[in-house]
Image 1 (cartoon, rainbow, N blue to C red):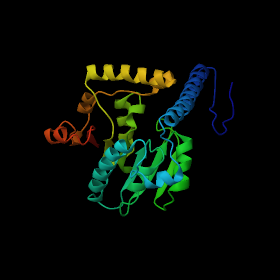
Image 2: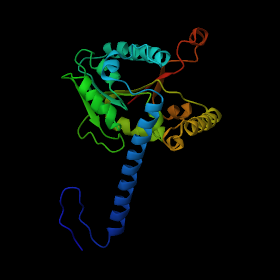
Image 3: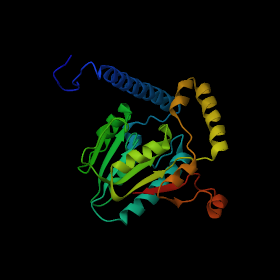
Length: 262
């Protein structure tokens, strides 16, 4: 049996039919999982009062909103990252994975000669980002990082800001990111907690109870607690150490800033 190829079809024969069916089933499972995550994520964002108006979004990370303490932390980490990138060579090509409503991507686009792509699987906030942040050097893409392929695209910088915890495997997402980096490129991870093995297990239980109390227990299946030891498998560096004596005394920032180089 043979089917003429058209867009989104494959040539089939009896020898590879079963494999083709498995591929289709896998694609459908991934698509359903992505749609499930998107709807759950928006439900949580709404309950947590994290869906902002266009006017509020334009002000971020400066806000007197309910989560102003969190935004103070995120403002500090964003400022550190932007200042670091400003010192790099010009014409930076930057990808932010899990950009949400795009506030950080818009900030990164203010770096001279930078070109920025913000990617997210959340259509509601991506459409808002497109509507609110209009810059010639800034683009937003609605898609999952696991599904999209940047053909012949090599980035200098890939950023995960409060987003890498939504990927089930830290190893997989870092390896995928390295594929899209030019030689000498860098991955930067900010605003994300990492754990030792025991702490990760405890944090997983806390998250499960949190989402149960919120009425969206399924969300716990999409939120992951990665162990910091994974970075030992990569060329990594702690750019900001939340466990430093000064930071612990001042209680300024709870998250490490980690760089992975290619």
